[in-house]
Length: 237
Image (cartoon, rainbow, N blue to C red; front, side, top):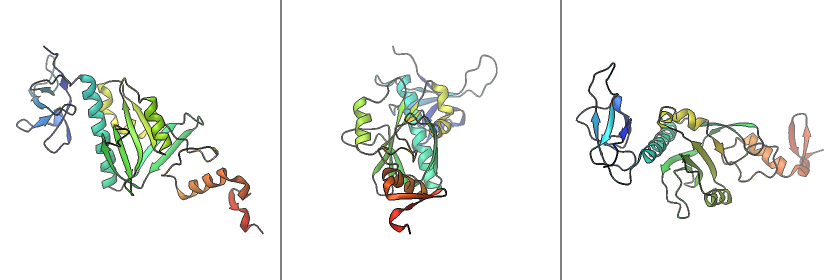
């Protein structure tokens, strides 16, 4: 007999993640991983010897594991946060230590239209695909719990000018810090430093001033610097 898996989160009938402490008895809840029916166990008792509220499977499927539960719950929460920000017209803030230039980077992602879990790109199915306003996949997010993306996937995203964001999770405790970990991902495949002339792929979310600096550094012979600003040489008098 398989060991029972106790869940802190379950999906309600609307597909929204609900914490067991906030769940209501009599409502329907489902596993974020295998989508099987969950049982809410919530006695209302507190103190020594009492168990915290949790969900358990009514019948555990063979393909459902604690690992898949943590991974899929984290993924679902990330999608909810991104789409909530989009609905409220809020940017998605990202801060990371660049693996290319070794500098700290910060960007506010704007111009994104939706986030979709397990979107089929034919060649690849990322954990999360984030689309721009033109309906193109602009970035993907891989939730790494024991299994990092394959080298082929990393190469595919690079060749197709798609940002790759990786977030490493270690335990169920990380489910309480999803928004912070999304805002501070483990790694981002792209360098946004304007000093790097060989930056590929281009960042589709740069401000106009940053985008201009990229053009300057890609073709420095076509520009001249006056004070702290760069100007096209063709306009130099």
